[in-house]
Image 1 (cartoon, one colour):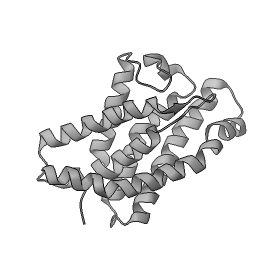
Image 2 (cartoon, rainbow, N blue to C red):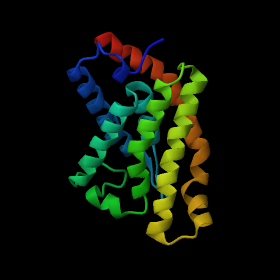
Image 3 (cartoon, one colour):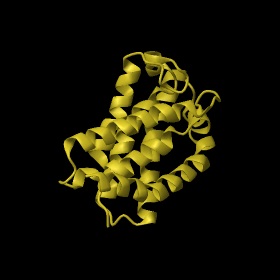
Image 4 (cartoon, rainbow, N blue to C red):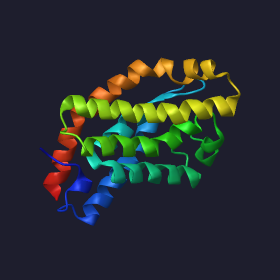
Length: 184
């Protein structure tokens, strides 16, 4: 079975850096596929975050998402609402911050598994849970909503959509790793 890039010692540093950059760019592009609803928009970013973990492994996936956050911190308008650094004081800041640990957790779990389809899907669900944990807590704190209102607004409407994204990411992961490993 294929391994994620960080586990393969044959993967060169330039290939790993290129793969990290590709997933950073994919996260930027996926922010453009947005349905603006308040207070949390629907984007394809969760799909990319999960896919980064499944393809790159924990460390490199987290680095790809950290690079995305650095672009936002540099005030580049690469977030879903084109806010730049202001996105970090927005009610949705927790979701963005959650991308880094979510990518890591997803990748770490898949590195420790046998990489069957259902294991990739469960690793994706774990990553989504991490995003929700960061997102809904900061949504509550930034808006002053009650906990149940933050949960109902920032998690419940997205569960079905994000479970579908996890399935798609799990299906795409094996092909993505195969392409990257063929290049090494």
